[in-house]
Image: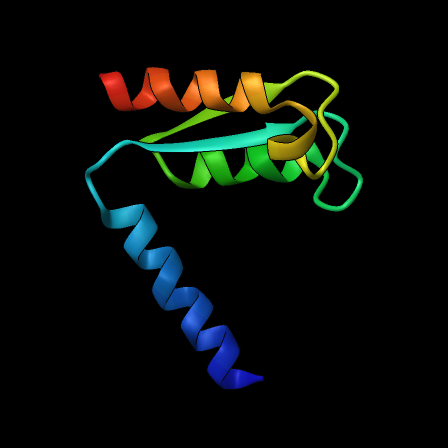
Length: 78
């Protein structure tokens, strides 16, 4: 358990200290990982952009593929 927590801290440090923009995509109706967690992660990673998929459940890549693809295309074209 300690090794897992240490690994999680190390990964979090990498995300927080990197300088590249990071995109988070989260469905607002996700019942597995509640939407409030995405907004919490966004505040922890200063360079993170949150794409909110209105009404999207946990599997937004399957249920809302056009919205996810559009957000990714826009992100990578910058």
